[in-house]
Amino acid sequence: MTREARRVWITWIVLLLLAGLTFALSFIPSDPFATPVALGIAMVKAVLVVAVFMEFLDARATPRLAFVVSLLLAAILTTLATVDVLTRRVPALPPG
Amino acid sequence: MTETETHLQAHFADLAKQTHAARFGMWTFLGSEVLFFGSLFALYASYRAEYGDAFSRAVRHTDLLLGSANTAILITASFLVALAVGELRAGSDRRAAALLLAGAALGVAFMALKGIEYAHHFRDGIYPGVHYRYAALPEEGAKIFFTLYYLMTGLHALHVVGGIVLLLALAWMARRGRFTARWHTPAELGGLYWHLVDVVWIFLWPAFYLLH
Image 1 (cartoon, rainbow over the protein chains, first blue to last red):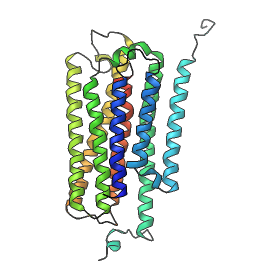
Image 2 (image 1 turned 90 degrees about the vertical axis):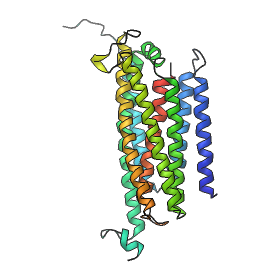
Image 3 (image 1 turned 180 degrees about the vertical axis):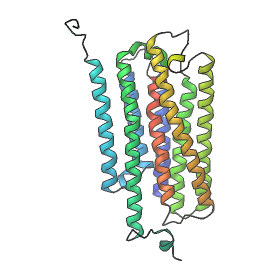
């Protein structure tokens, strides 16, 4: 087995273990850290797929830049959209 | 005719430059896909911030087992496609074709489970938008949750269908010996697309099945 193939096999096993962990954690009732932990594990899994299966680290600078910029823009969009909803207040004065 | 002459387009100086341009084009396309799904996740996050309790209750009404099985299926399909690209690099066309075919088969399994899941929801009266009539969760937030559920998982499912067709075409090309150890760019790019479909599901899974 080549070094690359071994890396792919190990990543697959780690991804399945992480998915199993997320699944098990979802049964913990009303855990305040459930959301950040589940999203954190999802983030780790996504990074593994992009880095190893998609060979992102081996890609040249221009494709990497195009992809990272889009990730950044998507993150800004999600953050600002959510913050907007969370910080809205009912106007103090009635309309008119 | 040499390998380079067969695959090299006239407007590129050499095969390396052509491959780089193709990869750049694909990563840019994947970037646009990230923005496409990213905007839907932004919508989900905004509504979740507004209707947090209703979303928490609604998550308990999706099928955790089927959703989780689909997670394992897509991760494994992605793994098989990554192995297939490695096999093409080593010049093993037949093994690569078999792996790509297995990846497509797992894609079909994913769609079958998704179909079963949708059928269960329809039976309960869980439809998107104004057609929603699920008596167990009558609140507005639950209706929005399931509308987003259909929108996001439905668009993702369309991407899976596209990926299955792509993998079948690549498997056929590999089986016919169209790729070489040096030139297998279509398989590499098709693999990138398939992996991104997997990445999107990695976030859809907690959003619609786990975060209650």
